[in-house]
Image 1: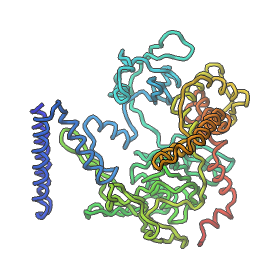
Image 2: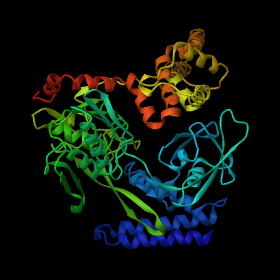
Image 3: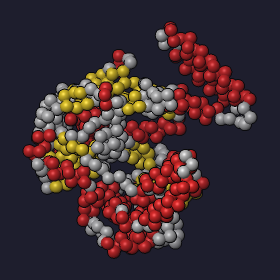
Length: 548
């Protein structure tokens, strides 16, 4: 244990050595604090009442230190590097299947048609019992994920439990290079409107969007919906490549500005565009971040697209990774990025934190006004504000509970076992009688959730206790609690449309996989419908992009 501790101290000394190249006025402060840390670590390691893990303790210290800067500056240990690489490249060695844990059961939630999982018989709904002879119940989710992935060309064996089968099914797969698509779906959502769903910005995202755009134009698309909802971002230069599809060569897309001169970079479009005229509607929501916001913000600044949806996340920070000793890495925020008009959309100020350590939002009073090409007003400091605001309906507490508990997933598996086929995704609908069957099936199933009203009543009760009013209000509070409990019994009916939409998506996935699941959402997707309506009304489209 002590030898491990000294290894850590040697690493720290190495860090100190490289830090000595910092300005002279900071030399003593750096050396002093590293010496204090090393001394403290040695004493705790020697004297603490129980045995401690040097690696775990230092990892905790590093995480806390970096988190005091911002949530995006992270330490990546050697055993996390592969996952980090997958996140950036979208590639890994595996079989092409996604799994999820429901109530200690590891189930297959998606298989990809062109990869070993699907080709060799693995299906959505299968429960993985053993992997290479090891029971998954004895592994953590992280351990199971690492066991599923591995070197390309190696073999993995699964024993799965399939609904309606008494015996386990043994399957064998040879791992391949798996490339997660940035564009899981593109297609025509109206006779003249093409749709591109972009969920990641890993390598080749620009190429994938370009291929989709060209394909849709060949199919007759006269306008395009680019869906960036829930896209957390990724590689900055892929955002530049995507903007390049709709902007002329030589146009500024984004500036990055940091403490070091080498991080002050202007990124411009480098290639001829695909189409400078085709009307574009970009969908964003609060989950659209980073590279998604660069695309939406740049196209908005040049009045090249109408942005619809909710205000975006507001991440205007750029990270780079650097190698460390022992095959570890660190991801460091090195710059802020600015859209062509000069606005930074970073919403949280991590530099000037509150007394409790939390980061506050940029107040409206200090937000700056900028002007687009057509002289429209846009603002910094708060994500990308859509040109057309759309109110997204939140998933109800009961809907979330049914999803998290796995009941929607399990019922979809049951449904698929009873139906050999269903209509195509865009036409599939559960009938009222079929939904009633689902409600009947749900009787006796365990799931819990707390509504917003229950949460507010709980807070009211706490305040009533604190201010000595509870005894006077006790009967009223208990009556409300009873009424809420009774009302919740009807939630499966009250939130029928919301629940049914997710249930239909789960069912469709059993027959048509990922693309089918995406298509099944279209009929109830208000944002997509609004986008189609706008693109069919070119006068309104042009009016939105004109001078305010």
